[in-house]
Amino acid sequence: MSKQKRKQNEIVQTPVNGEIELIRNIHRDVSGTKTPSYYVSDKGGFDYVDEGYMRSVLNEHYPVWSWEVVKYEFIGDKAISVHGRLTILDHGATRHFESVAAHRIAVSRKDGNYTDLGNDLKSAVTDCFKVCVNRLCNVADDIYRKQILSQGQLSDIENLLAEVMETDVRRKVVRGITSKEINSVNLTATLDKLKQIIADSKGDAK
Picture 1 (cartoon, rainbow, N blue to C red):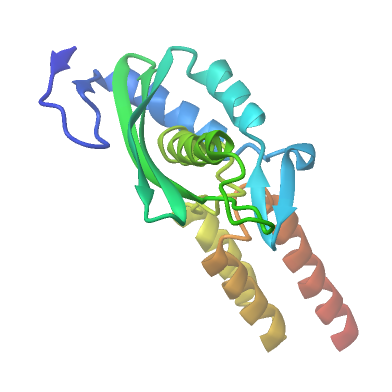
Picture 2: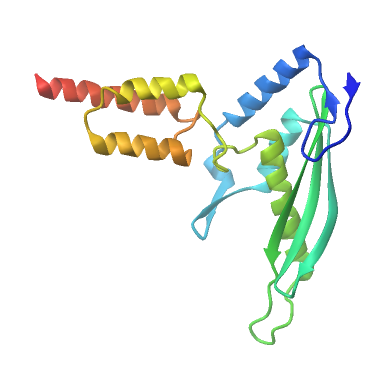
């Protein structure tokens, strides 16, 4: 395995062809895994994935990893910003990803003093860690809306849409693809639903 000059968010060692295919398959499998609803919570209308779940998947598929807080800083007196780096051994290739996350500093309504700076910093570190795990390892891609359908999968949908007469249905499917609500996890269900709509419309036409 040859060495490469380290660049941000890039492979720092070059794997051989067989390793590249293995890496591609592992990431595809992890990306296509549905995140159990038990580990997803709604906060202010946004879905949040439990850090423990993401760490568990990381340990399962990429057991050799390290996490480093590169630096943290205060953004005035309103928030704490954290710059973190996740490094993994990705089936023969050492890879890393860096991200930045911020968390609002909680203050007491009674006297305006900080409530718990340590907890605010921990929350910022957790948010930063989760972003790195998702971007580098594809964990919880369905929740982070990072799943992209392959050209073949898109063609399967488009072929069925060509037979769907209802404009509202076609628009809904297009919006679902664009927003990534339709993804590899629910693709089969989507195709089955379209087939049923087509069959029902043909039955009504008889």
